[in-house]
Image 1: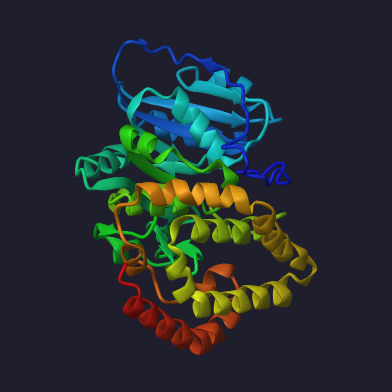
Image 2: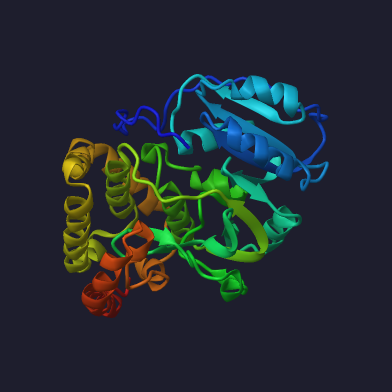
Length: 377
């Protein structure tokens, strides 16, 4: 999904002002809707052309499919009107980011369940029923499917997300055979590429935080759900294929680092951050080393992330207060599902990953054990 104008970095407002128009999907407005499948699009007609037929062939009559168009210039909505008239279309005049698009779609949705799906995916029969069945457990807030690589369906793209205590998040099980992740499991975070949530839980959590714009918002929502006392669940029998390739596009490093800091500052107690300080400093050394070794001309993105935090400190504190006021779980509960290592190989630098695992994993594991020993709150 395109990031658009990432210069909009302030978070004083709870989101971008968007005017939306909803085109009816031909359903009876009074009929109850089981699930609303929401797809956020930005200039992705080529993907939508493949995604929508797979979705429409698997949903039930009591479901609805909504595409939120984030200021596309490729004529996506007009083409959808001709090719997929049963799909509800929500138009945003600008690209307010992934979170804003999801929130806009959720405001228009009528379903008891909200299901979010990337446009560069296709779904398999039964995917939706499996996701929703696991939400019948009231302790589960969100479910996420087995996401397979579209170019190699025998390999996993993501079985939920793994999260390091420093806020760095990675695709769980990336590259592993599908059979290796065949059991349901609680996960640290869902994958934003595909997940489901009950409507009342979404409303109680306030949806996605639009300040993230792009990246890490799925981890933030998962952490907020878990701090509220819920679980996030991986559902292996729900299968989605994802046209995924690792890329470091424009401003990606800035957004990922900025959003990682926001994630930590919003969700963790100050004393937890103090205990994590050695791990955080080591993570800074790792991210700086990666940046300077492979993308030296983009060092300013890391500095911009620091400056953004300083410039938006008051708004960050306000968001933090909102999260802390409703928490029911301990920081220890969040950290217990974290992983003590980083998935360096997911950067595509396999040789460097080998040495990083050899030299850095022991340090991170030691710091993780120390953290769990100290953090009892």
